[in-house]
Length: 274
Image: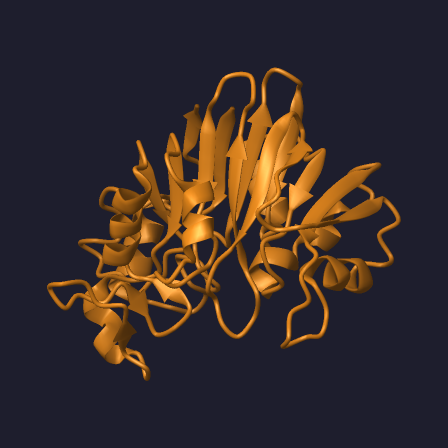
């Protein structure tokens, strides 16, 4: 299993357009990018590739990293920074299987699968597969399981990807607060590599209108507002899940410049063989 981090940034990416903060300036000086979130997973045994989420930066990411076009994809939720790159597959692939959750979202009265099907009805090459969370499906030779997480007000899912032949396992937290349900944690547990949402360090919770939530015993917030984990929360999740290796993703340019590119914060283009 070869994992390529195509996009490791949040909604605006780093550097952010029009921003001259120290972190964005440092990223420009060091030629570092964190484009909008997407992960490429190659099954070297079968020669197939699986894409997790369609970043609006799809074209840039695939040209830059020169990875194979996807044979299948998983959509974790319908926020634009995870879905709106899907239109880029027009005249790029002949066929694409897309897997997305079949649970109805009370906010939209549709499942993620239905939203993808309806919003991208013009892409005749798509075959959307409504997928039941917590039940694995075989995709590109991997066992892929969507797991519910907490990213209000919309439903959102993390993903566990296992190679049944080698036992390699990749877990993605999805966009989530620290309050991930226990059944989901059990599915995500014991990965060789965990990609965990860590939008900002906990110290910045004081600047969020809703502050921080899910404080640990030391009073450190593990959730920034309601939608994303803090760096500290993501690292505690990694410990809870017994992750062998962790990379923090979905990172905002609000990290102080002296912390923004330190371990274990990921940048675009990182590659891991599991």
